[in-house]
Image (cartoon, rainbow, N blue to C red; front, side):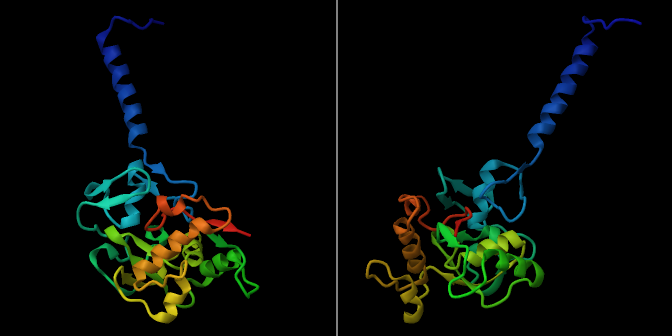
Length: 231
């Protein structure tokens, strides 16, 4: 059996080509989001920095990403996932949204529903079986186009169940009724718009037991990360 000729340039060229193909395959392999981000299902991402793009329903190519979770839009919104609406283009009113593109206004959600025998797991099972039930959630287009919901438990459950969210989409400056505004009173202040309502709820999180005191500062317009389920 003949031994390989280590001086053969074709041999080295072949080895270099093989190494290049292997390295290229590893680089091109899409990364899978895991952990608290997109916990509802595995979302394959081409580039890690695109993790922040769904928060604004924008393409990573037209978005200027700052550090952390702060995202500032450079251009207009891109089209969202099939079957959903890109609310970065000024769409308001009743519509269906992808829950993975909606930010949370709370750092935690309760496992047990108040004044009910239903809990979070019951809600997820119901959504998997029957889809979205009940009234739509209120989602507010925050500065930069970030869609943030004032209802957090059902958004998280919809992520886990893998269903779309029925939502009433509102602009930041849309006036909020007195009845609704009372839900978001903070330190005696009553919000006048839906945008202020979201900001008040976000700021209140730093007063909640067990929540990082800097949470509201890190996520002033809401967080894309799943809130912690407290029991």
